Image (spheres, helix red, strand yellow):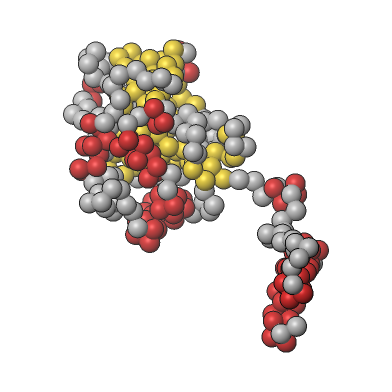
Length: 288
């Protein structure tokens, strides 16, 4: 479950992660993730390059920002502050953009074997998180549907930003089995530790014991959530390709080309894929 492997992010010119490097990084850890109990997950220490994680912490917004959300809901979240990335400074916005990038999505797809992941541009529930003394978050399974984007929530990624975290502070992330009878893992929220896990209906987790930190010590993290779309979209919308139209003054050759494009669209909608592929290959070969 616990791994040490630094994500190969190049910070010499902004923040850059090569897609192929990200894919291999995920593949190398995939077996550990997929076969973990009580649900697919992984804990990666030294996750980000040291210089990068240090900059993220240095840029953590300590003062209240415009769209902060503070939870005082008891077991459902106590003394917890949620910071919208859009309110943060330029560097932090760049960091969140990286975690919504193609390369990070490729890493996560390779790690989890979940295809077609979608990041959340609105960071619903995500962003920077900060919990203060006495704060907690009860054991729970996360919301399943992003109602703004109409997407299925599939993954959480949490990166902890807590330097010199002491065991007596508490704040450990707990992973429970599906029956809620056994606590399977206890994960300390230490600096530069990343936890990634499936957000299934029975992926029970939380840090339910009140923090016993000194007043000046906060439990901080960066939280990202990832989604997939439903294939039922094909039942709701016609899945044709780009539909071209001819202007009245188009020449005969262009009009013929457009008629062919429109015909292909309708043929693709009405015939099995194998027939469409055979038809277009034969037509192209005969140059019809």
